[in-house]
Image (cartoon, rainbow, N blue to C red; front, top):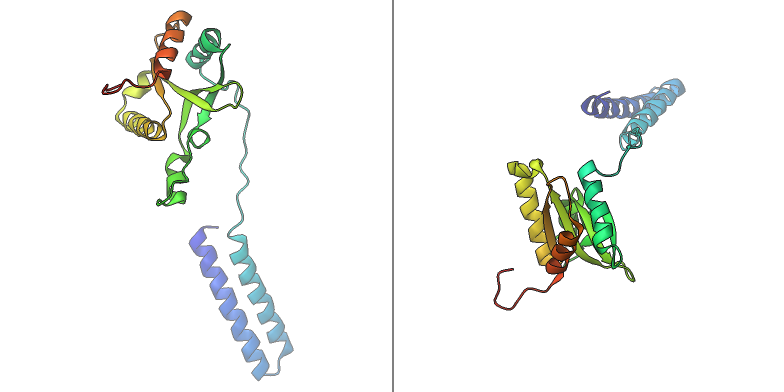
Length: 194
Protein backbone atom coordinates (compact mmCIF):
# COMPACT_ATOMS: atom_id res chain seq x y z
CA UNK A 1 0.00 0.00 0.00
CA UNK A 2 1.50 3.34 -0.97
CA UNK A 3 2.16 6.00 1.64
CA UNK A 4 -0.47 8.55 0.54
CA UNK A 5 -3.23 5.94 0.42
CA UNK A 6 -2.27 4.66 3.86
CA UNK A 7 -2.39 8.18 5.34
CA UNK A 8 -5.72 8.90 3.66
CA UNK A 9 -7.22 5.63 4.94
CA UNK A 10 -5.92 6.36 8.44
CA UNK A 11 -7.52 9.80 8.52
CA UNK A 12 -10.81 8.54 7.06
CA UNK A 13 -10.95 5.65 9.57
CA UNK A 14 -10.34 8.01 12.49
CA UNK A 15 -12.93 10.53 11.26
CA UNK A 16 -15.51 7.82 10.51
CA UNK A 17 -14.85 6.19 13.88
CA UNK A 18 -15.21 9.51 15.71
CA UNK A 19 -18.46 10.17 13.85
CA UNK A 20 -19.83 6.74 14.85
CA UNK A 21 -18.82 7.21 18.49
CA UNK A 22 -20.52 10.63 18.66
CA UNK A 23 -23.57 9.59 16.58
CA UNK A 24 -23.92 6.34 18.53
CA UNK A 25 -23.99 8.38 21.76
CA UNK A 26 -26.89 10.52 20.47
CA UNK A 27 -28.76 7.51 19.18
CA UNK A 28 -28.02 5.35 22.24
CA UNK A 29 -26.53 2.75 19.92
CA UNK A 30 -23.72 0.87 21.69
CA UNK A 31 -23.06 -1.08 18.47
CA UNK A 32 -22.30 2.10 16.53
CA UNK A 33 -20.09 3.38 19.35
CA UNK A 34 -18.18 0.07 19.45
CA UNK A 35 -17.76 0.07 15.68
CA UNK A 36 -16.59 3.69 15.85
CA UNK A 37 -14.05 2.81 18.52
CA UNK A 38 -12.73 -0.05 16.36
CA UNK A 39 -12.42 2.31 13.35
CA UNK A 40 -10.50 4.87 15.44
CA UNK A 41 -8.11 2.17 16.74
CA UNK A 42 -7.63 0.87 13.19
CA UNK A 43 -6.83 4.37 11.91
CA UNK A 44 -4.36 5.03 14.69
CA UNK A 45 -2.67 1.65 14.16
CA UNK A 46 -2.19 2.46 10.46
CA UNK A 47 -0.48 5.71 11.41
CA UNK A 48 1.76 3.96 13.95
CA UNK A 49 2.70 1.20 11.50
CA UNK A 50 3.79 3.87 9.03
CA UNK A 51 7.05 4.38 10.93
CA UNK A 52 8.02 0.71 10.99
CA UNK A 53 11.22 -0.06 9.12
CA UNK A 54 11.18 -2.43 6.20
CA UNK A 55 13.25 -5.54 6.75
CA UNK A 56 15.90 -5.67 4.05
CA UNK A 57 17.90 -8.75 3.14
CA UNK A 58 21.63 -9.03 2.57
CA UNK A 59 24.30 -11.46 1.42
CA UNK A 60 27.93 -11.58 2.43
CA UNK A 61 30.32 -10.17 -0.14
CA UNK A 62 32.99 -12.52 -1.39
CA UNK A 63 35.77 -9.94 -0.98
CA UNK A 64 36.16 -6.84 1.20
CA UNK A 65 38.27 -5.01 -1.39
CA UNK A 66 38.90 -5.12 -5.12
CA UNK A 67 41.84 -7.07 -6.56
CA UNK A 68 43.86 -3.87 -7.06
CA UNK A 69 43.10 -2.72 -3.51
CA UNK A 70 44.15 -6.14 -2.20
CA UNK A 71 47.47 -5.92 -4.06
CA UNK A 72 48.00 -2.40 -2.74
CA UNK A 73 47.13 -3.55 0.79
CA UNK A 74 49.66 -6.39 0.60
CA UNK A 75 52.33 -3.97 -0.65
CA UNK A 76 51.50 -1.50 2.15
CA UNK A 77 51.79 -4.26 4.76
CA UNK A 78 55.22 -5.20 3.38
CA UNK A 79 56.36 -1.57 3.04
CA UNK A 80 55.14 -0.01 6.32
CA UNK A 81 53.20 -2.68 8.21
CA UNK A 82 56.01 -2.99 10.77
CA UNK A 83 55.35 0.62 11.80
CA UNK A 84 51.63 1.20 11.15
CA UNK A 85 48.32 -0.63 11.38
CA UNK A 86 46.62 -0.54 7.98
CA UNK A 87 42.85 -0.45 7.67
CA UNK A 88 40.93 -0.82 4.42
CA UNK A 89 37.63 0.73 3.32
CA UNK A 90 37.33 3.16 6.23
CA UNK A 91 34.20 5.24 6.68
CA UNK A 92 35.14 8.96 6.66
CA UNK A 93 33.35 9.76 9.97
CA UNK A 94 35.71 7.24 11.60
CA UNK A 95 38.66 9.46 10.66
CA UNK A 96 37.31 13.00 11.13
CA UNK A 97 34.71 14.44 13.46
CA UNK A 98 31.74 16.51 12.37
CA UNK A 99 31.32 18.00 15.86
CA UNK A 100 32.69 21.49 15.23
CA UNK A 101 31.39 24.50 17.13
CA UNK A 102 29.16 26.80 15.11
CA UNK A 103 27.95 24.35 12.47
CA UNK A 104 24.91 22.12 12.07
CA UNK A 105 26.29 18.79 13.33
CA UNK A 106 23.56 16.69 11.76
CA UNK A 107 24.09 18.23 8.32
CA UNK A 108 27.88 18.01 8.69
CA UNK A 109 27.61 14.31 9.57
CA UNK A 110 25.24 13.65 6.66
CA UNK A 111 27.78 15.31 4.34
CA UNK A 112 30.53 12.80 5.23
CA UNK A 113 28.43 9.79 6.16
CA UNK A 114 28.29 8.22 2.67
CA UNK A 115 32.02 8.62 2.01
CA UNK A 116 34.86 6.19 2.66
CA UNK A 117 38.55 6.02 1.82
CA UNK A 118 40.60 3.08 0.58
CA UNK A 119 43.23 2.86 3.36
CA UNK A 120 44.12 4.50 6.64
CA UNK A 121 47.50 4.12 8.32
CA UNK A 122 47.30 4.37 12.10
CA UNK A 123 49.95 4.31 14.79
CA UNK A 124 50.16 0.93 16.51
CA UNK A 125 49.73 2.20 20.07
CA UNK A 126 46.63 4.43 19.94
CA UNK A 127 45.28 3.61 16.46
CA UNK A 128 45.34 7.32 15.73
CA UNK A 129 44.88 8.05 12.00
CA UNK A 130 48.16 9.24 10.50
CA UNK A 131 47.67 8.98 6.73
CA UNK A 132 44.83 8.34 4.30
CA UNK A 133 45.64 6.55 1.05
CA UNK A 134 43.37 6.63 -1.98
CA UNK A 135 43.96 4.26 -4.86
CA UNK A 136 42.94 6.02 -8.07
CA UNK A 137 41.67 3.96 -10.99
CA UNK A 138 39.80 4.92 -14.18
CA UNK A 139 36.63 5.72 -12.20
CA UNK A 140 38.44 8.74 -10.71
CA UNK A 141 38.40 10.39 -14.17
CA UNK A 142 34.61 10.78 -14.05
CA UNK A 143 33.44 14.33 -13.18
CA UNK A 144 31.20 13.18 -10.31
CA UNK A 145 34.05 11.17 -8.81
CA UNK A 146 36.48 14.08 -9.23
CA UNK A 147 34.05 16.34 -7.37
CA UNK A 148 33.83 13.78 -4.56
CA UNK A 149 37.63 13.38 -4.49
CA UNK A 150 38.17 17.16 -4.23
CA UNK A 151 35.69 17.37 -1.36
CA UNK A 152 37.36 14.48 0.52
CA UNK A 153 40.74 16.20 -0.02
CA UNK A 154 39.33 19.46 1.37
CA UNK A 155 37.85 17.72 4.42
CA UNK A 156 41.06 15.82 5.20
CA UNK A 157 43.24 18.91 4.70
CA UNK A 158 41.02 20.97 7.01
CA UNK A 159 41.10 18.17 9.61
CA UNK A 160 44.89 17.91 9.39
CA UNK A 161 44.97 14.36 8.00
CA UNK A 162 47.53 13.88 5.20
CA UNK A 163 46.38 12.21 1.98
CA UNK A 164 48.44 10.15 -0.42
CA UNK A 165 46.98 9.40 -3.85
CA UNK A 166 48.32 6.33 -5.63
CA UNK A 167 47.65 5.60 -9.26
CA UNK A 168 46.59 2.04 -9.89
CA UNK A 169 49.20 0.76 -12.31
CA UNK A 170 48.61 -2.90 -11.52
CA UNK A 171 51.79 -3.41 -9.51
CA UNK A 172 53.12 -1.74 -6.38
CA UNK A 173 56.86 -1.58 -5.67
CA UNK A 174 57.26 -1.76 -1.89
CA UNK A 175 60.41 0.40 -1.59
CA UNK A 176 58.83 3.18 -3.68
CA UNK A 177 55.61 2.83 -1.67
CA UNK A 178 57.50 3.11 1.65
CA UNK A 179 59.30 6.23 0.36
CA UNK A 180 56.03 7.85 -0.76
CA UNK A 181 54.36 7.11 2.59
CA UNK A 182 57.30 8.65 4.49
CA UNK A 183 57.19 11.75 2.24
CA UNK A 184 53.41 12.10 2.70
CA UNK A 185 53.84 11.97 6.48
CA UNK A 186 56.42 14.81 6.52
CA UNK A 187 55.03 18.14 7.69
CA UNK A 188 54.83 20.72 4.92
CA UNK A 189 57.88 22.96 4.59
CA UNK A 190 57.33 26.55 5.71
CA UNK A 191 56.33 28.69 2.77
CA UNK A 192 55.90 25.59 0.59
CA UNK A 193 52.82 24.57 -1.36
CA UNK A 194 52.86 20.93 -0.34
